[in-house]
Image 1: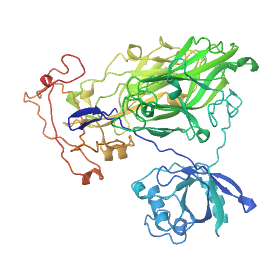
Image 2: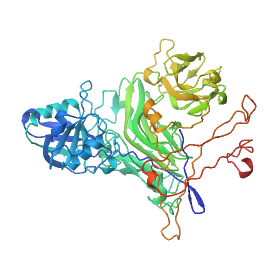
Image 3: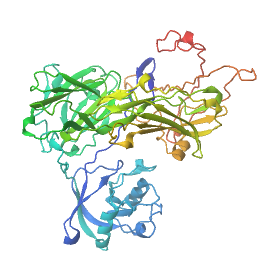
Image 4: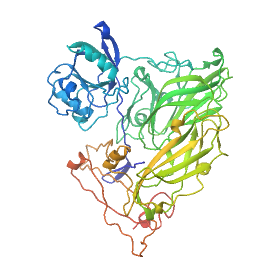
Length: 604
């Protein structure tokens, strides 16, 4: 789902850039016990995205909270009596994580460690979802695996001194990684090392890519720490947000106050890598970790050279499927390096035109792997009902289309793709398998549009009211070549057929019941700043939903009418003061002049 936000301060209408900051500042990742010898060592811990983020070594005595042994599901906030001034170990249960953290904080603990209770995944360090009380928690909170907690439990019958500290461990790579294994090659340990920022193409390029010690991209509308294996020793960041406005808004947008006005272009260039030192090369791939969020007219490329950077004949588009103003993407990327197995050297550069928000890169490495095919179905572009809820008579047919991308270096011959729709009982109400045997997708290439459109449409008007789950599944194994990763061969979608209700998004309860994406308020993550010298200061939001009405009369000949419009506010917003205006427009001819703007004379 795409969300558009606008803000109007008095008479000035501007775009509101919203930051969905994922606070991943995992500055603490190790709990160390020096004695007794039987349990001495480092234990991996996770870090909660709420409460205080520890940045220094913390030493204290640990103990299991008295209530967590007998009743891990007791959610009272005043039942711990033995953790004051100590590191409190608390068993996971039915209570929200922030509820347990707040209970430990109210009981005087200095740190909370929540232990996983699932013996089926004994080594899993659970992620800690904030929960309803997260804003009330200031206590640092960590998580630990089931096995590690049980190891400590045997020794924590009495207080045990322990240290919680930050420890930057290098990642462990397999033998397939031939370059980037050593610190200082592609991990940006403590700086650029042998990399450099190109200042020739852009005189201000030295103000584009920069090394950030904690891997954090920060600006007026950006706040994200890359989740890379060596984020702890720094990462390279191109934060167009900050470069454009120096982290302040309004007033400095477009001013280059941070060094380079948006859109800003810069290149991050690698050292020249001697490939003759490696033998028995099969197929080379470039792996790296990245985090990014795009606004309009933002582009990213990988440029490759075989002659030490004199020329760059090979250009590969990166993140071409990025959705404008979507949430941050944080992932590991693999790009085939076609034809470089026989090259003498490799020089690469990450070229970026930043027009808000940011791009971060870390842990660049080259792998020597067997050639493979890996066709994925792209989850950011596929055909499904355009609305979450629609009356059956308003969606008479559904066309099916799916984007396919080949992550491998071999050409993929797609055999077929199946679309299936199930009702609430799991019974298939529609299925269509299309023969795509003539479709070939070269390595690191997308297949889309007409090439991946199904020939028939589904008659949706025959569906009874209810919730339906659909899926696309591709079969790309042909001629003895097996798709290397079947896990990304399926994309699912859900929609609801109603008697007379239209809706663009599920309610909070529907999201919970069906396991859908989390519902966010339109104001979540927004950044406001009114001019302090203004005599008046007021913030306005404009939020729109649009619905296509197939006909303006019912089967009986009576005109269709809207009887009510429903919206919601969060609990936090419910205490605010203000006005909400509901305007309903009819667009009899749509966007008649196709200028992508609805003018006053085009609406009623």
